[in-house]
Length: 319
Length: 283
Image 1 (cartoon, rainbow over the protein chains, first blue to last red):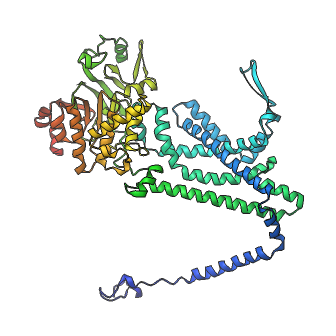
Image 2: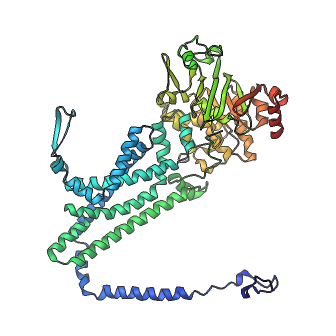
Image 3: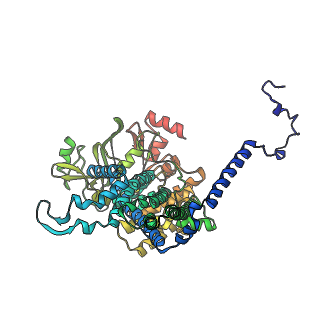
């Protein structure tokens, strides 16, 4: 016998072994683990059903109540608006970060540093109390006459304070993602655009950004789900979002646990929907990737395409 | 600097340091050189890559630049439309300094918008095609005419179809670049450049990234273009193309022009030992 051979190698001469005879390897540890997990899960479900403190009848009563549903509407509105404003600012900040202009670079660096560094909750309270810092906002000549002036308190409602805090935080994160997306676009794309006579701004807008944004759609989807949950912070500004609506009810009825359950269930439902949407988008993006000129895949590819397979090599910077 | 002082006085009757007249105005009218490369120097991280290159290309001429890799030929080509900045000397296309504006006695970098306007006249075809992957073939071609020249969409589309027919891809207008072979992509890239009606076409090793069986279709399009009277500067390893199509061959090595002349002179009867050893290696 060969010195390295073990008992498992003793198979006889070629011709006797056949891969089709392979049977499944027994996995006793996985079976034991499954039994334990099922046991724990059943205990948890048992607790959910039998623990009267959960008051499922109260949960059912409030699950579709008007207060809760309008709270969901506000939560969704804030999520979408904050993402939209955050992304628009994020694109601008990312482009500034990559510009040749040192002043713009520094400004965007400072923006990202500040809004990524300050917790959104602190920002929400700060924006809400802006009037204590500056009582009015004016348009006019610096240190000179003013043309129009607004009371800060009339400008900054709880909603705008919440929107500013959430959108600015998002803009800092989005800017970094978009910057990475822009840098992932092949340098040759800009060179091709420039050699066709496009200015830097035209090349950025028409050639680079569309490709960069496709690259960053998955992380942006992820951020949207985060944002949905971050909106629960606005309850400190007494904005009637999903969480605050639940709080409002249990402050009245003292049914704290069932109403937190109502909020939890809805947050889970909403994030599940968003996750599914994100998966769908990613799948369609991937389908466009190198799809080839056949049937449905090609037609999908026409609408959703990520990056092509780069043929050839990257142009040489040095000779 | 001496070069600056010389340039400062450049008018229609200006002269380079080498004493030759600089043609201001359209060389198609004046009959002068379309491209003047005058003592161009360039280095990367203090490693010199171009050591004072000078040559001229007349309107309608096809000029092939050959040489071993690392000889500076691609860099030289990229300097002509200022994808690379030169550190000395000057390049003129159609009588105007490339990427530089003259203000009395001072030279400044051109404003980005002016540089973009200058590049409209200089088409470039890359080794790696650099088609826009998120746009169809048609959209790739009409993009620059519509965005840069503000050509009406209908006109741009009609011109694009004509160009696609010319490069033999009339049926590929709706395809995306990654659905095409390398040879087809490069032909689209040529059509895309031609859509801007350039006076000069630069080709940077246009067939080097292609499978051998696809080289021919691209060279055929380039040959057709040359016969049509396009002024072309081609960096290439295709000696057959240089021999057949070029009016002039420039052999570069180590940042210098070693030898230049007609294909018959340089390729068939090289005078310099470096040219001979290079040609012996590639053929």
